[in-house]
Length: 356
Length: 168
Image 1 (cartoon, rainbow over the protein chains, first blue to last red):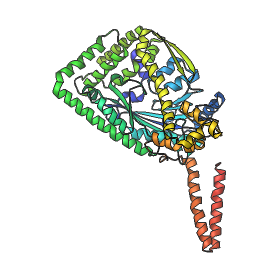
Image 2 (tube, rainbow over the protein chains, first blue to last red):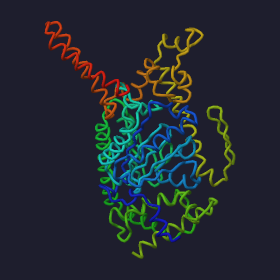
Image 3 (cartoon, rainbow over the protein chains, first blue to last red):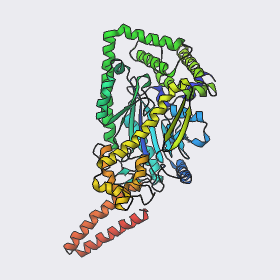
């Protein structure tokens, strides 16, 4: 398969980088956790019960009256190859625990991959919406619309005092996790990020790397999300997150301007060296690729590099992950082979830019 | 390179080449420990808040009973070990132990203040209406306006019937 076709088949709508403030904010994500009241939580339910949950949700799918879910596809974890599951994880469409640990786990995925509904993960139902750029409100509206449709046909575990009941008490109440993925090379370069993280934490928000809990901030990409799910309305949760994110964006812009002013040539040198590495290397590891992609993306955002489109960071951060590389290669790859493939894929992708 | 991780008594052996260990090794370690940390944290939050009375309750030898969810059978200790509840009813069964924990997890909050499901939310709304009507009924009876009271009583019955039909 040609690289162009492979990429076209692989990208989700959010990777197009056409959302508001997409120069700094990669995605806005909303997740709603819901459970069915008549079944034990996935914590301890039996295979038989898990099957019943899936069957019940499956029976409701044809009744959902929501345009974005038209032609949505139900993916059952048992029927997928390990590599296919890994790719879905790398695209943030399902969680690692749904892929590896769930009993009768499944995912209903919309055509444009903006909506994914995980079934039998930590909770019976997890509705997830991902949009490009800063669009928390739109993502919440979409998730609520999906939620309303499901609720018409399913009996949720809900309690007046505690709200939506979830298997983990950290999610109870709204069941809402709102998160924003940001590219913050300016704040990292000026060493401000380290100071910023504790103050963000104090506001009841969590900062993480690109692949969630415990992962490092590869390529200067950070995820910021709400911690508190109980006692605040959905609206207030996203307003508060939005405010903090907007402040961080402003600081990132200020940091970029400061670097350009004080050390413009050094920055330009760093960016073009990274572009050189991406265009010419024959072997490249994940970490180096992520750092160079971050530099090049910064170069595009501040106007040093003009002939490369902005979405290469979004695309290549995902496409150079181990699962995707192996899918493209058509089979398992040893680590060294992956590094070679990664270098090749990046070169070919940059070549596509020059052809356009 | 060989890793052995033991989580909840389940032993997993992982064999990695040096390269993967570099890329993935820390991931295994971190994901392993973070899950562990969350459970510990939850257990800590419960314990920090437990007063002597609660400790006694938690100790089956002293109190003679184990708090257990009467629907799924999970005990408080099991929940602490896993860091998750077994079913929706656990929230009722462990109601008393839950308030301090939720306050700590959610910045002092313990009561839901967000979305209400449309369908079962309708039931909530009907219950509210019945409560108001019952108050009206009492005032009417006190004023000896029996004709009006009878009307209100019929209205309440109508709503109560709706509740029953709603499968509550």
